[in-house]
Length: 201
Image (cartoon, rainbow, N blue to C red; front, side, top):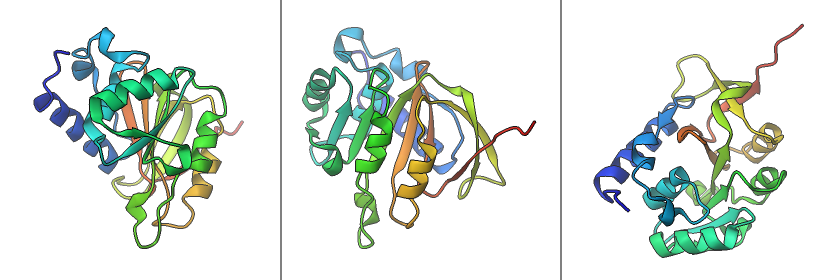
């Protein structure tokens, strides 16, 4: 792996923070993803592996949704020492592009929402999607957004209502990262309000 574990992962971390603090901001990981060699991926995309290398350590647990879950979990464990576990215990849930339809909705239902005493014990869901620049139009409001922000996500799941239900008792809830096949990502923290931007005929 030609990735510089300190310099390049710091760059990934800054981009994740930027997108989380400014919901709707698209961050580009193509430069860093190009440094992840194919033999290191083992069924996992370069961008998901970058996020895992940046955020995971031996203190966290994760769950992979994919037909290749065993192989991907082994790779992530070997690289980060994070521990695979069941969805309802996981700190991070990874919905890979080849996951069966319904896995994202299942992950939202299963994910830890935290507690009033420790809301940060909730789960982060990382979702691979076709595109974060095309697809369904969503209108965002909330902290980090001046008025409203229009984004597009190509997600083949009915997830918006499930997320809304999961996040209804703030500060409890889940945070989302969407990353597409071009290594571009959007983060949607629990504080962001989402409405479908349907065009009226």
